[in-house]
Length: 554
Image (cartoon, rainbow, N blue to C red; front, top):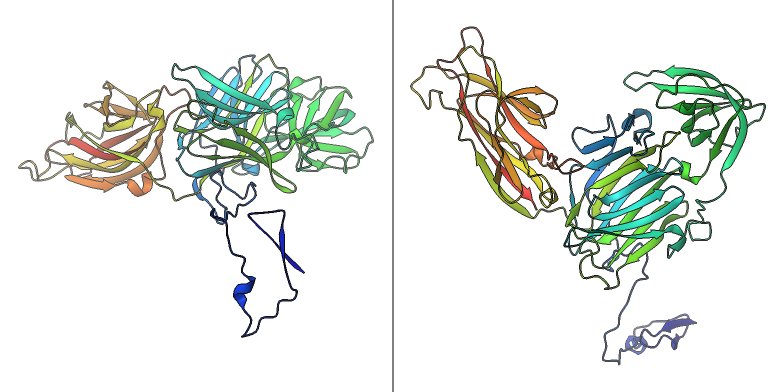
């Protein structure tokens, strides 16, 4: 028999004959169940991760608003801003595994922060998912590790604080007070990661420990285009550990007489009598004695976590992990109409990682990052403001034979909040030589080269910035401001007389943002150099002016 359950009265069923024989004379309408209730029939999907925060079934890939995977370096000069406090606090790109490792050093106030220069918009009415693949690199007392979409005032993140694993939603109040709603894993409302939840993951299972090892050799490993690492061979005291620890996983070392050997390492190889562990920072002189222990827990493994929310920020945030049985919801943070504002008040936040010490450490803490992505369930679009800037000052070369390079015009965001919420995209630039034949009765124009630099160091008399647009500022340089060092060259070219260059295609991939503490936002600076060749000097020295058109993504 075939049973059809009534959507209006789920306790009753209709029975149809089985099999159903349909002929030309069969009254098909006799098998249609009419809706005699005045209310429309509602078909609702179960509230799973296949349903977005707005109740829509996910049937296609979302649009990637942004994604990142460390490829050839850690992008600390272009896509990420980093801030380090304390001796030895740093980040290191590990090219062989395409990851970045951060450490706060050993100081009680040591910290390392890695944050996207770009702030990502919370788009109202649209579902968002933010993904992170990383390795917590074990738990450590007095060490806090975080990752998420947040900054110092707003956002949401996962947090490993000592032995406590939390999810946190942070928001600011009108007077600037920061409030955090922190939920410990013991209070997660779906999977507590203690082995009893649907994922089956027990992050708190007893670590696998072996004792009485000794270090017998250290070898620096150099590879073409890769950083040097150090392989340390440990004698296992006759115990075969080849089936105990899997090659390629991380182990935590303790008990070594040289503290630099203690901490998290990669297992490079194993045999019946030895283990080889890789250190990405030189641990120095071999420790003595058979006092070393290895341990391994789920906190030493690589995981993918993500957050799922609606851009309006008034309902809920779902915190998720990719488990061996698929995507598993860990916890749903739900305001349930209990707040007078959104649960995150800033309209945009960066992706951010941080690791910090709350007490002095004897073992170097680390956090290893692999990749991240921001997905929105709609096409990528802007909410733009438009602006343009032009120079008022002449930048004059001292002679027709001078090959000096001078800054002409610069642009960037204003420092601090709320200007960090915007992104700046340059559309085109224009350069003109006022001493060219088209502007003066000269026989020959000067030839020049130009380049557009991202965050260069300049020398000379730097003018005060001028505010423009809703969130931006610019610098109108005078003669003598030159390039010193650093920065990232975005575009370059040659010209004479004057030219207009469309840079939107290239710079749409670069959203100008800010540093971690919002004190020094990114800058784009136009540099021009007069070029002189035998018999090809201009009749008059170069006198340069420029203009730029830009979009503020607000």
